[in-house]
Image 1 (cartoon, rainbow, N blue to C red):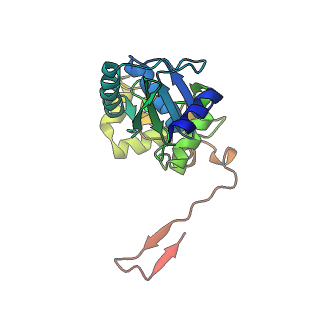
Image 2 (image 1 turned 45 degrees about the vertical axis):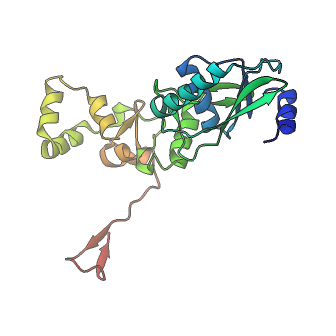
Image 3 (image 1 turned 180 degrees about the horizontal axis):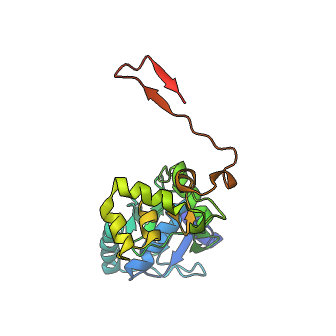
Amino acid sequence: MDITTLLKRIANGEDSFTQFKTNITNADQLAEELVAFSNALGGLLIIGVTDHGEIIGIGDDDIRRLNQLIGNVISSNITPPVYPITQIYNIEEKKILVISIQSGINKPYATNKGLYITKAGSDKRKVSQDELRRLFVEGNKLYADECMVKKSDTTDLNYELFYEFLAKDNVAILDALKFNQLSLPTVLENRDLLLENHLTLAGNLIFGKYPQRFNPDFYIDCVYFAGNAQDVCEFS
């Protein structure tokens, strides 16, 4: 980006793609800004400019510190990592640091404190639960059977059937449940059968009392191969 284009962008003020900071000294603050841009459509974080678009610049020591801070933040404070590009501009003997962040291809991104943030105009906000699920699906991080079944909860679970499964699959976990060493919601969440106190699709289809209540038209295709030959199979 040439200086003329950058000056026009600064003159236009902050928006969803442009954020001004006089300086940044806090790693958590920087992580939130990078995460917000990465979860949205990307943009520029310009350091050395006031909220009103006045170019005040930053010193060489600050530029060196910020470059080191950026490296530390993207490797330790953001999951998954992002890879911004930094450029230094000298405008009327005042240096500013421009950080360019692309829209992430591995959304959703979170800070190391577990915050999912995106842009909201010139500000930022926490990602809603519906948006978060969509981002997980778009990023292929959430499979269909892990999606939440709304309006369901643990009362819709067939406990007897689940305990019978644990008796065959993992007796130690079953015993831990019986002696209150583990909570049932924790076990269900660890097996992707429960999400935010709602059954997942897998939880409802496999262990639901009345799975048809929430998925009335759902069906599963299964393929059975006889022996090692893949040219003969039966569908059920």
